[in-house]
Length: 325
Ligand SMILES: NC(=O)c1ccc[n+]([C@@H]2O[C@H](COP(=O)([O-])OP(=O)(O)OC[C@H]3O[C@@H](n4cnc5c(N)ncnc54)[C@H](OP(=O)(O)O)[C@@H]3O)[C@@H](O)[C@H]2O)c1
Figure 1 (tube, helix red, strand yellow):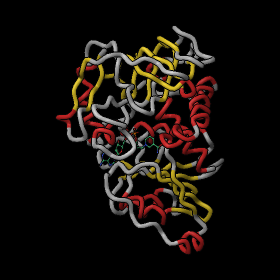
Figure 2 (spheres, protein in one colour; figure 1 turned 30 degrees about the vertical axis):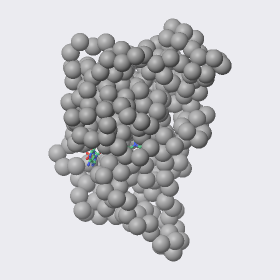
Figure 3 (cartoon, rainbow, N blue to C red; figure 1 turned 180 degrees about the vertical axis):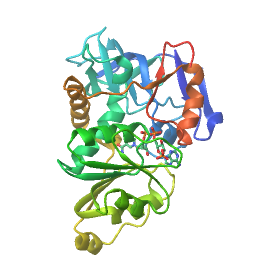
């Protein structure tokens, strides 16, 4: 079968589309014939050798897929061969013609849901709904999203609006077009001041932060009393800043939280399944998952490069059977 292969941690020279043996499902696992696989920033982190993403080399990245259940291992209930399903393949392996998934992280796709759209649920949309829940933000709240033009960022903006949040201020690098339903600002060294201006002079009930480094350090000051800052990524590749003092948190009445769906999949897979199922249920209640941009195998490495440079916009999926990008 074809798969995107990373030979070792490094640059783009470590990537190839390789022929490899299809995996076999073990106990409590299923084999999925992949139709669409999401491209995620986690693939970039795996290729760069960031800890916790690749469990060995060579490594096939890809953490979210939609396709057909091809085979079922022992002790799997509730899934049948031949049905359409999505899966969070948190150990990678998704950017391939066949992928192994834990049954607990595999959910049936309802007839009404398109497979390309569904492929963006298990990691991207599940993370976004997990973040919204973690923030406890509710009706009338305001939120700052420090990077809204990527896959998780766009999903988050959409779910926040659905959750009754009145204003989402969404930062991105200069030159990117605005995300629908948000107040766009440029992310630069005046980010916090710009964000508060864009929020009519008010601080925020929640800050969703995925850039890390200096951005993470500066956005604590964007919180209103009672607010929460959730750190869920470090795309800039800068080291984490020093944590604030407890007395700062007490004095400002604010909280800092962390969120990792990957860590959650390893320790509380049922909780991740609930996030995936919740998004699927919301699609039956009117949540619109945008059509992702589709690339074929021939465009896959170029799209991975765009993703690593931060210029990919919205969500992109590999269409496994497509003939051109
Ligand atoms: N904690 C979790 O559970 C979890 C789960 C999934 C993803 N994540 C994290 O969430 C973030 C978004 O993931 P995604 O899959 O949605 O990625 P994506 O679609 O590739 O979006 C990433 C965005 O980050 C911004 N960015 C800022 N500095 C960057 C840099 N130096 N290199 C590359 N991009 C940069 C870019 O947009 P702008 O510059 O316009 O903002 C880019 O569009 C990533 O940090 C990822 O690691 C976390």
